[in-house]
Every structure is written in structure tokens, then in C-alpha cells.
Image 1 (spheres, rainbow, N blue to C red):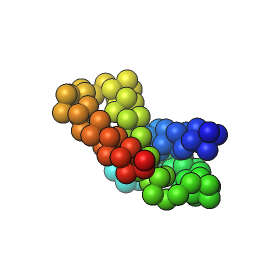
Image 2: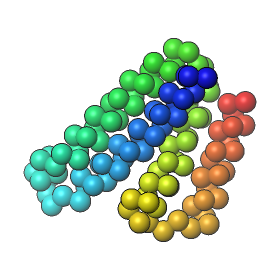
Image 3: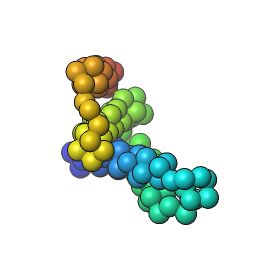
Image 4: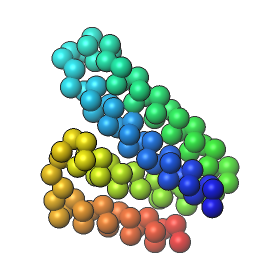
Length: 108
């Protein structure tokens, strides 16, 4: 059970990393982007997420882990709504739900 909690944490970290990289992308020019701390926070979170992914693969089949990483889409949609104030449409919700259903079918 603990390994699945780590998997959920890994997917959440990936979504948070993307948020920081999105913030870094708002910099004016490449020089300012390279000086933006959000770039490094996002990169570090991606690295930690990747290391956690590798560790999880020691205990679970690749055919289970990879489909379950689609949880990242759920976190991303929630974060984009709450933090970035993006509009969440029915199509976006339906798309994420279809991805999750597919992941469940593949990993079952």
C-alpha cells in the first residue's frame, strides 16, 4: 500500500514541477528565464519525481506504473484551476476521465 502512496506522491510532484516551469516560462527572454528560481524548483521536482519513479519500478511492474502516472493529468487540471485560474471545460474533464479509465483498464 505504501508503494501506491509513493506513486501518488510522484504524480503530484510532477504536476507541481510543471506549475513552476509554467511560471518560469513567463520570463522575458532566455537570460531572465535562466535566472528565474521557478525554473530550478521545477527542474528539481521533476528530478525527484523521476528518482521516485525509478524506485517504484523496483516494486511494481512497468505495465502498472506507467498507466498510473496518468494521475498527473488529474493533479494538473486541479492545479491549473486553483492556482492559474484556468477554465475547466466539460471536454477537459471528459478527456481526463477517459485517460483514467484507460489507465485502469490497462493496469488491471
